[in-house]
Image (cartoon, rainbow, N blue to C red; front, side, top):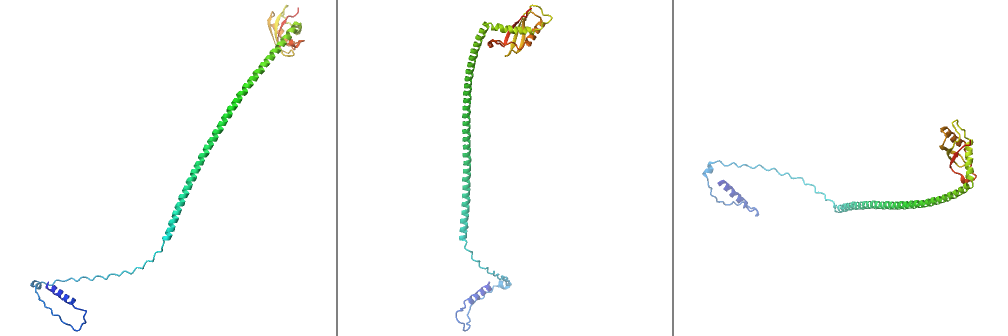
Amino acid sequence: MAVLLHAAFVSSALLAFDFSRPVTAATPLAIQATLVVDEDLQARPPPVVKQPEPEPEPVQPEPEPEPEPEPDTSEQERLEAAELLRQEEEVREQARIRKLEEQERLQKIKEDEQRRKREEEELERKRVEAERKRQEEVERQRLENERLRKEAQEQEAEELRMREIAEEDARLAAMSSGAMQRYTFAIQQKIVRNWVAPASAQAGIECVIDVRQLAGGEVILATVGRCNGDAAVRRSIEAAVMKASPLPEPENPNLFQRDLRITFKPEE
C-alpha cells in the first residue's frame, strides 16, 4: 500500500510541472516524505500486476461512397397516380355504361315482350270478333236460307196442291166424259191379248191386277191380288201384263196414273 501511495505522489508531482514556462534549468523540487514500512508487506512478495493485453487497433472501415442523389420522381409519381385514377375512372365509366346498356337492353326486351303480348292479344281479340261475326253471319244466312227454303217449299207445296187439284178436276172431268173407261178398257184388252192361258185355267176367270208403270206406259211391277185362279193362272196373268208393256196411253194426259188397278176378265 505504501508503494502505491508513493507512486501516486510522484505522478502528481510530474503532472504539476509547468510546461508553459520556458525551461532554463532544472530546478529540483524539495519533497518531504515519510516512508512507512509495513512489515507485513516486506514479508510478502509484491503482487504480480498482470499487464493488460494491448487492444487491437480498430480497423478503420473504408469510407462508403456517397450515395448519388435520388432523382426527383414526385412529378412522375403524380402523373402516374393521375393516370391510374384516370384509368380507374375510365373503368368505372365503362362499367356504368355497360350497366346502362344492359338495363336498356333488358328494358327493350321487356318492352318488346309487352308489345308482342299486346299485339297477340289484339290479334286474338280480332280473331274472336271475326269468328263471332262469322258465326253470326252463318247463323243469319242459315236462318235466311231456312226461311227461303220454307217459303219455297210452301210455295212449291201450294203449287203442287193447286196442280193436283187442277189435275184431279181434269181427271174427274175426263172420267165423267168416258175417257177413263176407254183408257182402262184399252189396257185390259192389251193384257188379254198377251195372255197365254195355262192348262189349269177354267172358264169365268176374274182377277184384280195392281200395275205400276212409268211415264210412257213402261210396266215395272205387276202383282195379282184377288183371283179365282190357281198359281199357274196368277203367273200367266202377271207375265201377260209384263208382255203388254208399254201400256196404251190415255187420250187425255190427265188420266195417266203411275199405279193402276185393272180387273182381268177375259171373254169366254
